[in-house]
Amino acid sequence: MAQGIRWPYGIDLNNVRGRHTNGKNVADFFATYLGLPMPPPFLNLSDSERSQIKTGINYGSGACGILNTTRVGECLSLAQQVKYFTITRMNDLPKALKTQKKVREHLAKSIYFFSIGINDYHPEVNNNITSNFSSTGFVDHLLDEITKYIKVH
Image 1 (cartoon, rainbow, N blue to C red):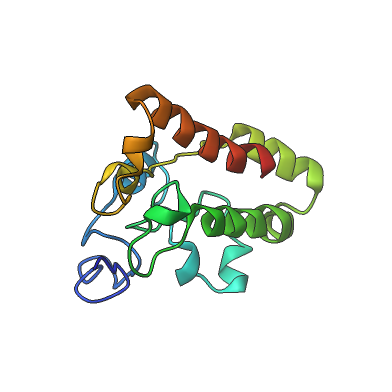
Image 2: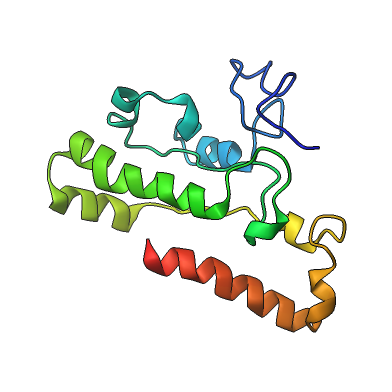
């Protein structure tokens, strides 16, 4: 069962947990390429640390899919990841940027990276849900699900 919060994950990256890698993940490579610091995992930050970060936070969690039914082990569902982003948007960024106008401008210029969904296609995890759809129908279903979260938050 996948559990990125356990040893040995993160031992070569300051013991950062919750990542299914022992080194950099795709979001880290993007940030580095753009000259930004690697985005720290949301769950590794204290409230005061979160309210000081302006260059990105990683809400990701290995072993989760877009669909809530395709999660494996201890992972953060997409709904929970979006909830944590909402906490940052509503509570932490206003502390760091001081005004709602600056928060809106900051978010408008931000890059949002989603890397989720591999479990949705894995037959041992998705209980063969794909058999209920045509190939394009399942893709449309997943896009509808992820779009719900993007539009709401």
